[in-house]
Length: 76
Image (tube, rainbow, N blue to C red):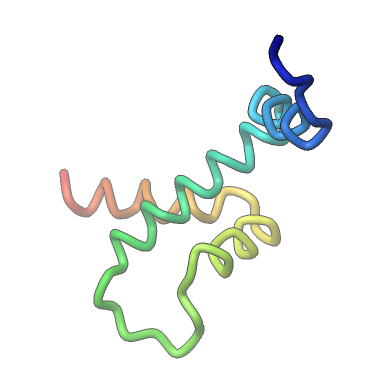
């Protein structure tokens, strides 16, 4: 018989199916994309996934705006 799932495993699995879990994953993905775009930039402030996620928390839509601006600059 299979061992019963732990509460932690159930919570992690359920989190992927919640709105908060999906939004968190999307923000992390956007942060990674912005880091790839900005590779080689010389910035004074720490430029990490965590700092970009904090930026998104403070200014919702900031990461999407950065990616959109980059996309427009590259393809237009």
